[in-house]
Length: 402
Image (cartoon, rainbow, N blue to C red; front, side, top):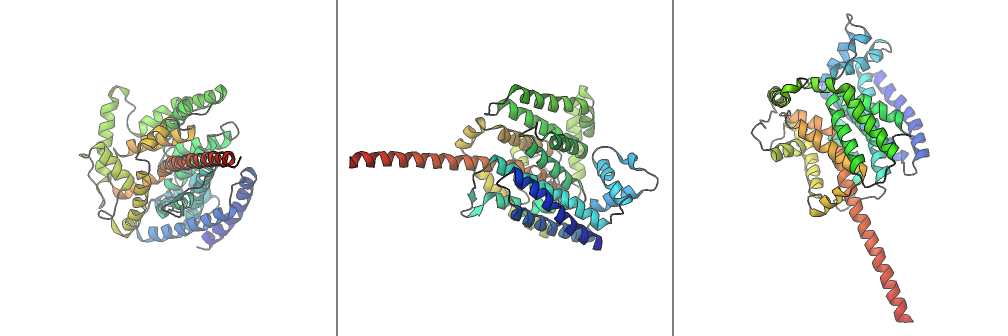
């Protein structure tokens, strides 16, 4: 316990150096906001720790597995769950981190995900948006409790979120941020190989169809990097879902989806979605539980957050949004593609509300970015229109006086 408290304070000091570095690069950067966010996120590390103490939690397995005396560090190298054991091994066995310290450390990686999410949003969208009359949009989504809960522990949720948000931030300037881009891609691949597929698809589509004029060498760098990387790891990605037999790809995917959905539906919060049409499956994944089907107290809390998701989503259900999406920039098309393709794949294997609450935290920020950008562009158009009207009025008044 003492070690965990010490690490919280030590990482708070490390944060100041990180914040100072970003404050020099970005004039918009708010150290005060990030410090508040760090301690807010740390609160959820404590909440999750208490939750894990009284409930089954994968974090305990991630802590005890690397302590197997029959295995050395290299034996844990691999993808998915194995990679978490590989990452944890030196901290547990060489630095003697306790369970509490590992929870704090991985929770901190989750916080860095929020840091890069903040940079991703503010760098691309300088206009501030008020939502629900008088709430700052960015502040709202940065402090959503469910997002923090599932990224505040020793597990895949914290580090995959860190990798995804760092990738989103780095991809805008791939040459200048090549180290972060490669590191983020590596993290995403080793934690969830199939997610890298969706991210690569979104990136390539964004660079192909974005409204910006991008130098040919930049496009080539992205195409070669993303497509070449996928070709190198395609067997691992397909193997994760048992799809490495390309002769029966569709049949294998159907069998995998049915088996996985059946496995995940065995818990008390299972939802049989096999007979649902696709739109209902997507609605279930994005916005449930929604009060009437909330599994326990946690489910009720999540229901309030899901209601916010739903209200935000309703803001893009109009003709103006589709026109905007067609002419949108790279970052918007990338985010929209990553969000939709990831959701599409996950709805076929998710049939447990608890798993849904955890899994969707890794993709919802891409939807928030699309909504935020759309609302910002709408606001910008209104500002431009008002300025034009004022200029015309000023000219008319000048003509009258003369």
